[in-house]
Length: 486
Image (cartoon, rainbow, N blue to C red):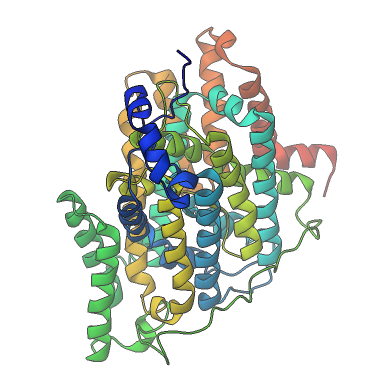
């Protein structure tokens, strides 16, 4: 008897007993996405796609909030254009994942990547140049996938440091949210303080706190779509307070929550294609290399774990983490960097919220197609989305940061050789407002402690190389001074 290959998510008995009958009546949609073979149905895929969209729709508000700062030339990106760019990039990348990868994974602007662009890249380069960096980092990741180096690098970095990077980025994102909401300010005589004068000031920041607590309460109750529900509720309350003239228009950081004109409008694609490659001489080759490296780090580590994790939950991965379309999914995730850069929305990456759709029964790329179509529909509702106050959207950043901190449970805090590098990675990221600095401190301290313990042989070649690069990163100014470089 000839053995038949069985796709993960099905059993040999199911495939042998039901295959001929299913094949005879399967639609082209079923055949293309392998819906029946994966034990799903069109209804489940549609429900899963809608659920995933609802779980990650907050990105349409948060990404423009993070990218709202000025670049080195003092220019800013328009909010309406940013919402359009965010929706378009998410729609394009997610549809690509659905039709080509054929797995239930949705992509959107990675908050960690956007945080790097806003805090580390824009202060040194113009926004078009920053988006050019996004394209470059996407190309780098695609090359790493093609050559197989992506998996090798993932395996070379200690697991504890991977968790530390995720936690550090979580604290970094949470700090951005607290600052954007006006909850944290630069103090007088202190680096930071509560509010502008040691106390909260104004209704908008109180609304932020109420929204934040509401989302946490919903999450504690296990409410699906807690972040989106909290944002919608906070926005409704903001609109009511604004209509009653309780809050003065100039108190809102991003403008009063009002609808100007129609709720429907044509998309603003003014950021699309506004990308520059070159003109980086003012920052130097070393700085450019570190920027690209930081963006790769920000968009690199979570993606593979998320893809495998969601694939396993969907029953698509085997016990070794292999799943159909894995290489395609990783490549598309890398391409998301370039897609986001060209669109003006920052790099796109796989969202862990895809697991919510899987929980509703999604097993194929059809659910991703549904999610992508919903993001595409949002292109025509940017005025409605723009009503959400920045203070309300900022609450979601803190929530996401808290969710990323749950990786702390995987760290052996009793092992100082692990705990110290993890601690330095996590705290230095938000304290220096630099993801690169946090990763650098973690890597160098990890290698130094291994040497001190007489376990240098456990340090792989890749970690030695990273240590050398990061040592130069920290010592660059003294080195330049020693060499007489201005």
